[in-house]
Length: 182
Image 1 (spheres, rainbow, N blue to C red):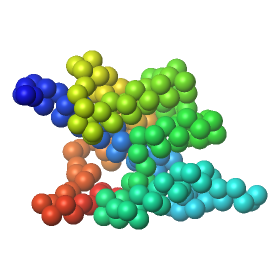
Image 2 (cartoon, helix red, strand yellow; image 1 turned 135 degrees about the vertical axis):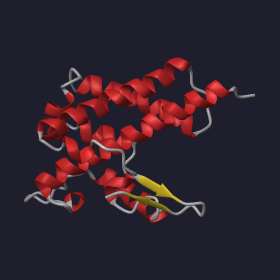
Image 3 (spheres, rainbow, N blue to C red; image 1 turned 60 degrees about the vertical axis):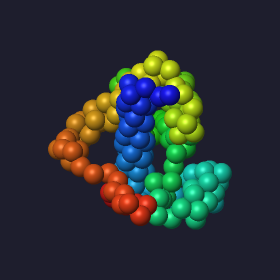
């Protein structure tokens, strides 16, 4: 039998992880659109090499094909492990995320470690496994550590008012139809 406080803790951890994923998608999208344009997933360098590795592109295409309502845009189809790819790939980290994330993190290794912990906790939550109070605390705290970095970045570039009010990021109806905010 699951106790009420356990349900509440699981719910809080899930909410924090989902918020982290939404904010991460937003910052990844903002940074890549700024440099490569809105079709950055299809961007190729002059030598023909893709900006984003083929494995990630294939996973995204498969997710979108399998569930187009859930993933209307390519950025919506990236999951926690894909976020780790974007944040921790050397060139992406140096060009886009170092200045943002080193506000609270000591470097790529710490970021990669935190994301791995969050991924493991998220997987437990979404597959119905139990999590400890400590894991719930990590999910909530680590998620907010990243989000605080993003908020500091948006303040730094003068966009704090764009994200300073509550807004819907996802709408879902009783028929399972789902829409995301652009």
